[in-house]
Length: 294
Image (cartoon, rainbow, N blue to C red; front, side):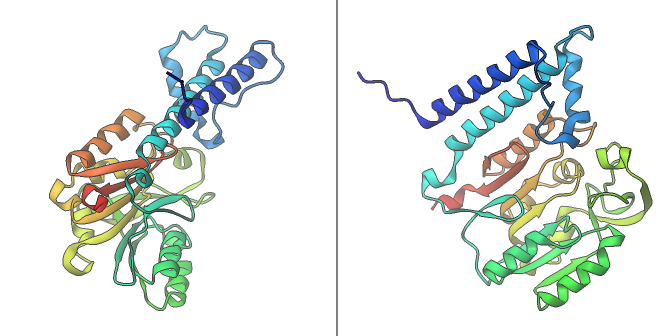
């Protein structure tokens, strides 16, 4: 029987060889290995060193290997989970999200975490002409977002709320150097930046869905800087099922209180609620109803 090397197997081999070359260079002192491709993620990621003796001289090398292997297996899993293998149309949208290409001008989306320019909502409105309900608690972004609302001909509606696990108010920490603030004090931006803190209104996922027609949505994007875990954990599965597809950026590498195992548990909640999962980088996840396979 002839052996046929599958594309994902070739990817693993190539990635292993590249890692081996880097580790050899590290061993001989020719070049230091960066702990992560994304420099700001280093402090939280480096907690993995606790698994190894403090006296280990190659701890940075070990961390680089773990990080690289995790990315390799994520890419392999992405090839296996790719919705296009099941005939589901998948498309990429700026800034960094994959979605199921089954939206129209009748679609409704919720955008949790608009940033300063609501780039994802702008992309979705421009492509499909849908309506977007956005949520952004950062005060210094509000003036710019109102200008975006005018350009979008009111296809975008903005609420100055944070999204969390409980309705009420909470202390929000606004970074003065970076776009993203957080309600979590252990977020990397909050620990290193100059911060302005103030009370904001907090809405649950259930409450936020009430602003949409029929209390349902075709798409939800969630980029809420570490608060996604509490927000999702406090949401019943029947509420999650009111949304056809979720695009979520998880912050297990940005918050000390989070971890990748916590992300896996959250993904499991969606799978138990009837969703399939796709991710290329183990950070940005697409979760879509299995009924979309039809």
